[in-house]
Length: 359
Image 1 (cartoon, rainbow, N blue to C red):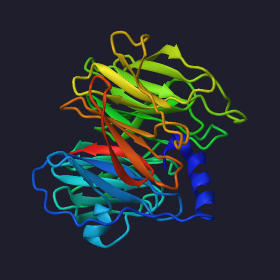
Image 2 (cartoon, one colour):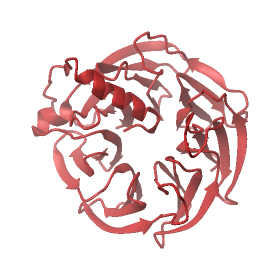
Image 3 (spheres, one colour):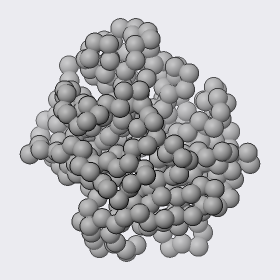
Image 4 (cartoon, rainbow, N blue to C red):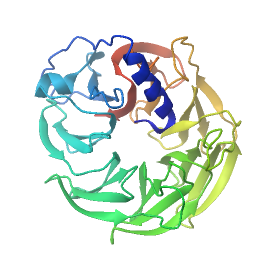
């Protein structure tokens, strides 16, 4: 479930009770072998077990929808959150189902499954035999062996002193032997994990509710915050863009947004010098001039709920892919833009396309 639109999923659930929802016609995918492409992770509605996986084949420039179900004849589950690939195996984190499916990225066939998770969010590979899986409710990060699909341990991140349910953990980036992860839900911390000891060793205070992380070519970490919401007992403040020096573990607030803004989804290009993010529309800035934030693509859809939803930048071509969940009860759309911001094509995908994974 996307952190920025939990309300939208609740609304989608309400709408479903009074309407009908139609998935795209299933297409049985061939063995795509070494074709490069883009996986689109479609969340589906919370509690409806209707998450799905789409695949954009770059060679044919066409989308295959429902590829996970069509190949394996089992549903993906309840709220597909994210996906990562290691050695031709794709790991799909299914948040509310508490599991991670492993698939062959050439055939889409299931080859393994990680279970026993509480509410998993993102997966990060420390090595080929060790990975971390963050969690919004467990107050710990799971340590797993991706080769055996077994949980081998946990990293305790519980903040026992807080009145709020801290710490949730989200996205991860790595600097040297340290993994940095943002704590979004009623929190303002970036946690630092030592991958050699698998222990929490430090935390960095930022602004309220950091939503995402990227690391640039100069090894500087960037995060963006949403500021909470009006009426929150944790507080409500202007969102901000923040740069973190991972060596000194100090944070610098680069800029503040307006109170009603909702920035999220930081992504970085392949050369590590330009950062993109969503704030209803798509914006970007150069890392050496972050105060000059420029509009990249505007959402002009009258059917869109709160603007664009997901974002990805191809590390090879710098093409930009942006998703629109529309009203959260219709199947979504993915737009492809050139590096200069020209709209090139759109694709019909599954319900609430939220994350992307390049193959």
